[in-house]
Every structure is written in structure tokens, then in C-alpha cells.
Length: 350
Image 1 (tube, rainbow, N blue to C red):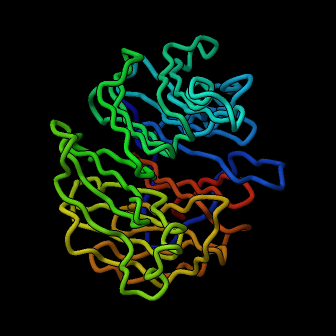
Image 2: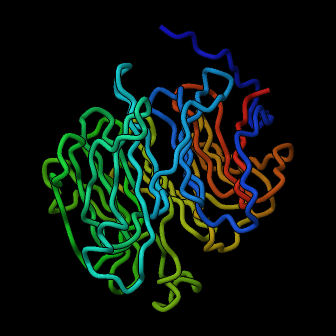
């Protein structure tokens, strides 16, 4: 049994950079994805050029493997499937191909693949179905299945042992993000309707046709969200369940962060951070022990108290560039940030 890293949170917002994991030299870095394994030992990254890397957190952040996801199409979304010590697999999506290609060409370009990190040259399975960019991949916490959502309005539930989908829905709704509850019983999905309204809904895994509950994210009584034409530019960029399954955190591409109960009632708006709309890189917030954290365009990392939502701005956590994504290690008191220049850093308590 591994010994946990002896990190102790002395006080809120007392963090420092422990390691700069990778730097992308390109001036234009619009897309990069991060993903921890369920045990927190591995970190997966995908770069704009399509290179996928797996970093071993327990071995001084050394690269365990690195490879080109596909020779033609670029790897984008990535998740590490590690439900046992014997097998660690990567599930990743690709995108590219001709804009005016046939339906078959589009599905091949936007498919998902699964490989074992001990034999990255061999693709175990290919999952074909999406006709446009995959916007989200969510692994089930216990079962050998995962869900994927796409810009084409489709979402799938796949069995990692079969290339055929276990469930499929194709609608005119634009699917942004999805996330399994920690117990694996419910799936939360964000979607933008034909009337440009953005909603999040929860579904029982045993009945994916009818949502358990559904809630509109943007309040149309607020002037900036009244116009239907402007609403199409606002959408959910990340969804996360809390570890006790009692809360759902929805981040948007505006300065709006919503924390809901699991029944999508009693929404709590987290405000006070500096954030302007930036289409180049998605924004994400995350649960961290007793706080919620998110980056701002002023190069700061912000903290809110989870129980009351009050803001505690970190004056110490200033980054070189604006933070776009934050991922918390599920096992330790540390997190990684991805900034607007493609620099990934690991932060640990002082």
C-alpha cells in the first residue's frame, strides 16, 4: 500500500509552485487537456500538436510515456482509465479532417481510441459515432464504461470492451459537458437548446430518456443574458460532482460559476473573481477540500468557501499568465493549472 505524500494545508490559499510540468513553445495554444487517474498517481496531458503524455506523479513527475495520438488527426480530450493496478489505459478523442468531408470521413476524424500505456503502439479499440468535435469524456467510477458528448448534438455511453455504443442519443442540442456522480448512479449533462438556452440535467443511469431534474444556467432576467442571440455565445465549460455527491459545480465561459445541490436546487452563484469572455481556452473550477478554486484573467487563483460561497482572493497565488483550467489531484492536497500560454504547473501547500 502506497504511503500518501505528507502534504498538510496550513491555511487557505497557502500554496506554491512545486513543478512546471511542461511548456508549449507555440504562441497560439488554444487547446490542451489534463486528466488525473482515479488514484492520483498519473497525470495525462494532450498538446496542440496531438502529442499525448502520461506523467508519473509518484516518481518525481517523470514522463512514463509520450506518443502521437494519430498520424493524421490531432489528439484532444484525454482520460486515464485506471480501475486496478494491473491495467492502465488511455481514452482519447481526435479531431481534424476536411471541413466538407463525407459523414464517414467526419466520424473517422472525430472518433475515440483506447490504448494501454504499456503498449502505446497498439490501439485496443476505436469508437466511431461522433460527427464533430468531442467536447467531453467522462469515465464511470466503477464500471468499464465511459460517456462522451460532442458538438454535433450527440452523446454516447460506451463499453470499453466493445466498439458498439451501449447507449446513444442524437438531438439538435449542442452538448457541452458531462460528468458521472462519484457513486456512478447519475450522469449530469449540460446542453444548449435550439432557443439558445443553456441547461444542465441529471439522468439516472438506468433511464437515460427522461432527466431526473433540469435547470437553466443563465438567468434571462439579467440584462446580459436577455437577448437570445447573445445567449448562444454563453455555455457551460466544465461540470464536476463533489466527492460526497451532494453538490454539482458548473463553470461557464463567462464570469459565472454556479454551485447546485445534486437535485439542481438552491443554486449558489460564486462571484467576485475577474473573468472576461475568452473563447480560446475553456475555463474550469474545482472542489478543493473546504474550498472551491478557479483562475482569473488577472493571473490570480481565487478561492471560495464551499459552505457559504464567500470569496477569499489569493494575493499570493499570482501566475505568469491567466489560468484557464484547474484540476485537483483526487488523492493529495495539490492541484495543477493550465494557463493561456500552455504552461502546466503543479501547486502544493507550503
